[in-house]
Image (spheres, each protein chain N blue to C red):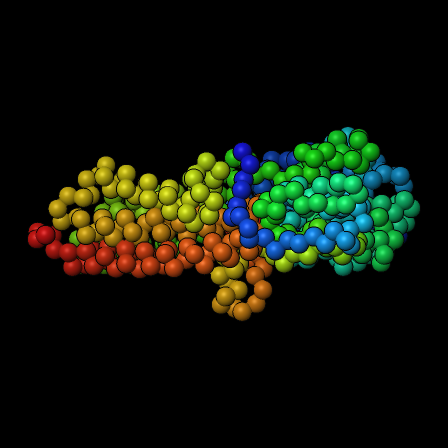
Length: 345
Length: 97
C-alpha cells in the first residue's frame, strides 16, 4: 500500500467515494519493508496516507481506532485486527510511530481534531467515540479533545496485539495491557538502528587509519580492528540485549563494563600485553570501553523507561569520563601507532 | 525482569488536593506509577516515572506536574549545541524510541 492509492491522502474522501478497506494480512513486500525500516533503509519515508480507512465491514456503530501514519505502525496494527469490523483514523505523524510522534506533539490534540474534521468522521460514526493507543496520551489531551470536538477519547492498550481482547472486554484494559514491556526481543529489534549509525561514523576513522598505516611505526592490524568492532558491538548490541542483567543503572556504566570486559579479554587472548604492544594496548583499554559506553548511553533514546532528568544526570556524570578516557586512550594508541618503534621498547 | 533507572531524579509531582479521583493517570501511565485509593490518586513508585508527561496532559483537574521530555542522550547533547529543547530527532541517523 502506498500513499498514491489511498483515497484519503488529502485527508478526506469526497462524497460518494469509497473509503479504502485495508487487508489484515501482510504481504511479503510488507515484511520486507518492515525489515528495511528496522535497518534504517528508507526509514524516514515509510508512510501511509493519513485519513480514514475501513477494516472489514464497519458500520455506524463500529469502533474507531486512531493511529500514526508510519507504515510499520500501520502494518502492526492492521495485522492484529483480523475478524474485526472497525474504522481506522490515521493521523499525519510524518511517518513517525505513535509514541515518538506523541512526544513531539505530531500525534497530538490539534492534529487529531483536524483529522476528525477533514475525514468527515462524524458522518460515518454518530457515536463520537475514539479509541487511541495508550502511548498516544503523551501528545493528546483527552479532555481537550472532548471539549473542542465533542469526541470522547478512550485510551486502549499499549500493544496492538491486545486490541481485540480490549474491545471484547467492553474497552477495559488489564494492568498488563497498560504496562510498557521492554523484553529481549523488543530491545533486539532496535539494535540495528544503533549499530548502523555507529558503523557509518566509524568508516571515516578507519579510512584515515588505513592511510596512516602506510607509514606508521606500528600499523594497525586485524586484532586492532577486531577489538574496535567488538567494542562497537558491545555498546550498541550486547549492552541493549543484556540490559537488565548488567549490574548498575546508568546506561553509560553498563556499556563501559561490557566494553571493558570485551577489550580486556580480547587483548589478553591475543597476547597484546607483550613487549612492544603495551603502550598501544593500554591506550585501547582506555579508548574502546569509552566508545562502548558512549554507544550504550545513546540507547537511552530507544529505551522505554529512561526519564530526561535521569539521562541528564547520567550524562553530566559520565560524559567527562568518556571524553577524558577516549582522549587519553586515543592519544596513547595513536602515539604508539605512529611512533612506537617496531623493534625498540 | 523489571527495568529500573536512576533514583530520585523525576520531576513528577502530584497535588492530591486538586485530584478528583477520575483515574485517568492510573489508566494511562505506561509504568503504573499511579493508583487510586479512597478516590484519590497516589504515587506508588516514583522512580519508575519516565517523565513522558501523559498523566499531566490528561489530568482534567490539573493536579499533576512533570517536566516532560525525551529521555534520549543524543537529543540532549544536540540541545546543548543548538540551545533548544531536546526533541527526539527521529531522522537521518538518529535512532529513535
